[in-house]
Length: 315
Ligand SMILES: Cc1cc2nc3c(=O)[nH]c(=O)nc-3n(C[C@H](O)[C@H](O)[C@H](O)COP(=O)(O)OP(=O)(O)OC[C@H]3O[C@@H](n4cnc5c(N)ncnc54)[C@H](O)[C@@H]3O)c2cc1C
Image 1 (spheres, rainbow, N blue to C red):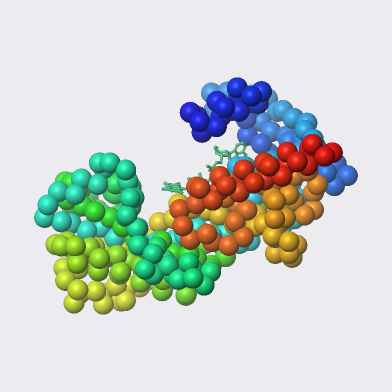
Image 2: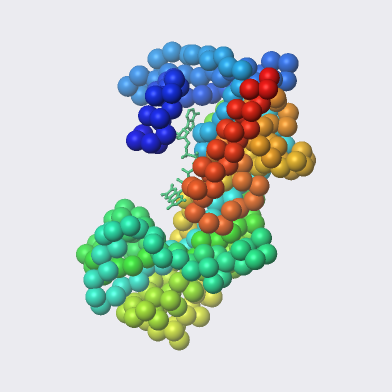
């Protein structure tokens, strides 16, 4: 954004207000007319501000956009109630030849073989390599202290991957009584089985490719060295702190669609309840999308922008 769309927008007359946190959408007579927020200086609140506008577009990401809607009292019955995250249990695999996963473009390989949602719209997972940065890799290597450090010394020989699940679980983004927010998510039984199956299939692929040792996605180091050990995955106690789960795609907290009982915004991202208020980010996905979401997020935002433009022109 810093080197692409933001400079382009500024060159065409957009005004950017840095270090400002939007805190509330101003609604008058059922129409969004602006935003209240706080400007920060050196990390401290410096002044309260208000921006007036004909239309308001919220793009603060799936968690914060939902928080903004909720803080503004906008359709709490449909906002923050269908959080999906693409959960996955990462597995690390050691090879005898160097892998050096930090080189080149990360995550260049994936398999659709188990992605049933491609055909049916539901369930399944994408088998994907994980990004090879030391920080992310470190979270996939089991053990503590010297045991962990010893494994990280073999980092050049490590590959990591997972089965990224098209989740059906509905997590929650909600406001707490003190005004702060809370995120709750734990995979339902169906998704839990898919997460374990994804890890197991990933381990199977690594073993077939010649891995000498693959780790279960558990805090305690349990390694699998041949296909005959794979049933160890089925014995994982699927409970908090017993299985490592990663997720980097929060989505669907302000779902789009024409059914007002389920969807907070219409098919173009406009709030069903507040005219002139739009959501344009990953929060509008009507279901878990199942694939890495950046392109879909950008595409939907462009579609909403086109709609908004036409709406303004015809007003
Ligand atoms: C570790 C990681 C790896 C990823 N890898 C991939 C990948 O390989 N491929 C892929 O397709 N996707 C990937 N994603 C997902 C991708 O980052 C998202 O799809 C995308 O960023 C979502 O865009 P968004 O506009 O919904 O939210 P964001 O990009 O999160 O943008 C929201 C913006 O709003 C700002 N904001 C939040 N609250 C407020 C507020 N109250 N007031 C003002 N501003 C606010 C935030 O600072 C942020 O700049 C990855 C995500 C993570 C975390």
